Image (tube, rainbow over all chains, first blue to last red):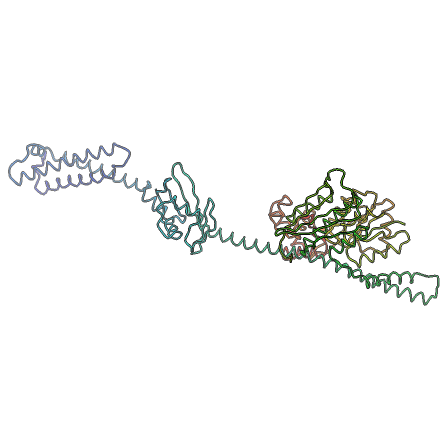
Length: 427
Length: 211
């Protein structure tokens, strides 16, 4: 069998170089496999490397001996006597194993996520992402989150806990619009994009996600605008509803006028018929004319004051009740209306329960409220007044206007109404 | 003579009705009031056998609500409520308030006096239906009860969310009702629908009822 010594010098160098290559490759693979979980591949690589190293060392020593022409090491000389065929086989096995490890490593790299691939992956996310410890120390963060930190605070994100705290307190750059500072802070950046930050806890670490809600925010803004428009529209509709009451009355008056006009025409016809027939017993035309004249006469002479207080005065007079007013009725129409409604209720109670002849009304105000008080000269209530239909309906109306109603039964019936001042009065 | 209290805010209508009453042989005017809120007090100070009362009276006082109070304290007084408004809910509300008779102001003097006669005789006179109203491309009777409820709140100026909350229905249901009404009437938007419904008298906003 051919030994190393019997090889030509070129063959010796090639074999030695192949063992050197196997050794070098083995060293690289050991580093690659070092962090892996399984031990066997690592042990096999070490064995292969030791074999390669030993063979390389012994052959190199033999080559040195040949150059010096004197034996340097007896072990090396003995080793070189071994058949080269066996060593070539060992070399092939080592290379085959290294090839297997390399293929496995490539496959592993393809199938396994590394830290850098995770970083690369999250950097490509359109959302901002940051994982951090309770202290705020960042574990992993993508470039979007860092860029958001620059846009919002003008600096790198170094402490995520502080970053979130500042977001929740709305401490952003002046160019950033803070839309919400609650548990999910939302901001609009100078470029018009809107971002919502959501914090959650994963086991013992914190996750902060920044979501681009520009589209959602634009829709919400549009919806808000539409709602504002709708509110304004509904307010106009309410105002219209109030004005249309007058329009309805006008329509009603027009209908009555048309009826009078028709009656006038009929009276003229009846009169003509009466004159032509000369029937003196027919008094229908006279009745018709009396009715029309009465209406036209009343219409001409009556000019009634339509102010609520004037209506109250007329009604009280018709009932034989004297009104004694202290102070000045506020000029605000709603307040005036509410006070006169209360007066009407007090009037009803004074007549039906107390047999009163005079209703006392006093109006005053302080800085914030208008106050009206109603009493009467009738008999005081025998027992505490239980609010019925009229009083409870009045209470509802007053409370709907933000006011207060107080009913006292002793020592005499007193109805007090307090309404908040909304401006518009000269006091 | 039967004593009548007339409650009507419009002076011309009031004068016309006063003449009808005074010209009749059977009735005499006990008094007139512009607002329903004075009606009960008047009945305590005067002998009144019958009240002829408008629905919508001065100072936002509703004749039907006042009638309910009067019927509670003075049940012997007959009440005839009259209106010029075809508001669909008035008849139902008048019945619930215990109003003896209900009619429209468009009636002639003879018809009104006849209704008063029959009411005193113990009859309860109510129209079978509300006047039919043209609303856009459709008639008022084509609206369902629920649609009228929604329309009433639209006229009162409430948003869809508030209407849904008040009627215990969802917002999409409110939108569907409004859309259906717009489709049938041919009106372009809710404002036009509300304005026309209010103008023709199908819906009269009642702040007390609608709030």
